[in-house]
Image 1 (cartoon, one colour):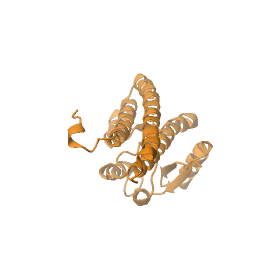
Image 2 (tube, one colour; image 1 turned 90 degrees about the vertical axis):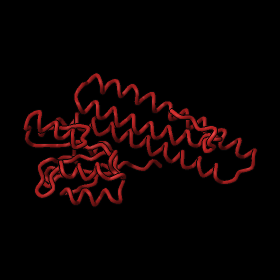
Image 3 (cartoon, rainbow, N blue to C red; image 1 turned 180 degrees about the horizontal axis):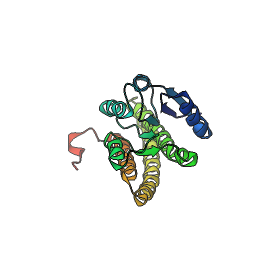
Image 4 (cartoon, one colour; image 1 turned 120 degrees about the horizontal axis):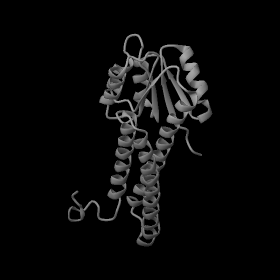
Length: 223
């Protein structure tokens, strides 16, 4: 059974959280509420999220400050953040959002279909990342289990190419998506494409480390 992705909704107004839940319920994922920046940071200590929808204007710790804390943490720095704001203060305000680490910046009232589509992209990427990490962990356990030679040939020899092929398929899909995002223009597109590249590059390095001889000094390639 595939585990659902978690989406963090951060807004100090209950009616806004209800609206977000209504819009995103069709994605059939786990929606987690936070009514303040402090509450959001607490949730991020123990839970893994596919994407964060973060209101900019909140009392106390606002969205920009909350995002800064998220990006400073090793555990959470790569989680995509979509800023939501009720007031459009112009290009400078939008630039501040991207500078704080947001992958997108949406002014209210927003198109429910557009927001749902944007969130679904990050949910899909998160699910693929989780699946690949689980496969890599399974393979690593098998390689470290001291299998007999025939078992190792059947297990590692069969799983490594399969895992590599699956990752290649995801890389191909991500390349197509990155091109689409680049063509759409804007800072959000560039940030999203860069996030995709970092995630997949990390997964590819993890997979390469599992290749036979990867841990031997003479077999390590410098790039």
